[in-house]
Length: 118
Image (cartoon, rainbow, N blue to C red; front, side, top):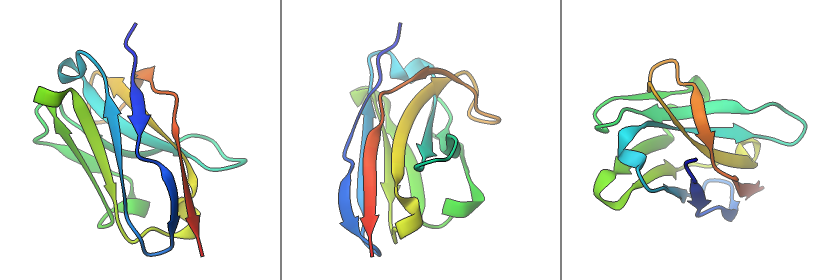
């Protein structure tokens, strides 16, 4: 069982930035993704990255504001979020899967809360 541990969430004002991190042993063997779940809504895809880090996919709603990256030597994947909006408020989940394209999660982290205030 793979254990993913997210960190970096918090409270930020609209227009600000946050960088989320997700660490896990063996992470380099998986494509990785980030999802968000806003209050009262389902979990939604945000971004994914290939095992090498060379290929990425983004949800239309975050393109140009969010960057997913990974450091396999540190067994860590990141989500840099800029120009944050109130509607970005959600719990953000890290996930590990087989393919960065049409990403499907095999493992989930516990989530980290991001709150964007106006």
